[in-house]
Length: 189
Image 1: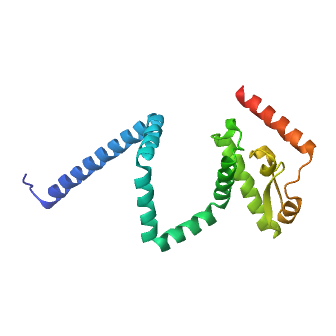
Image 2: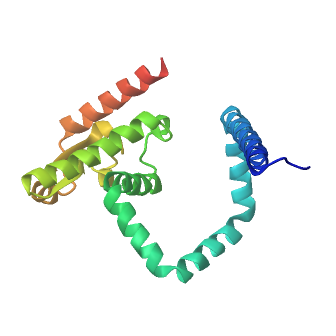
């Protein structure tokens, strides 16, 4: 293709660039729409792929972490400091799952997850504001069979939490059981 002058050549190049960018944006929009419409399919595929390739993925991840120790340590520190409440809530959930003490109807509930994270954020805010360390406490302790549920949590000073140990009064247990039952039946409606 021949051009009469430099401006014509530059205009042609710009039109090619614009058409490539428009096509790229169209393809990205199509992919995004497809992903949004097929979330369940993608989730199922990911679960299957992970199950089939778990060992290879774990070894690859472990070797990467060993090769990038300093970067990984910095990332973990910054992630924890930026997401302390979420990390602590996830740790508490993991411990409760191991004991099978998360009510079945709340295991994958996004609202419950939000309430738990907000409880841990409140603990952080109170500790920072008062200068006194606070804990998120299970009113009915997990050791005594209590559920890991936002209705069973309270934020109290660490000293008080450590002194109460795993003790709970029967009235508190009864109230928590009644509240959890009510919460479960309201959720089913």
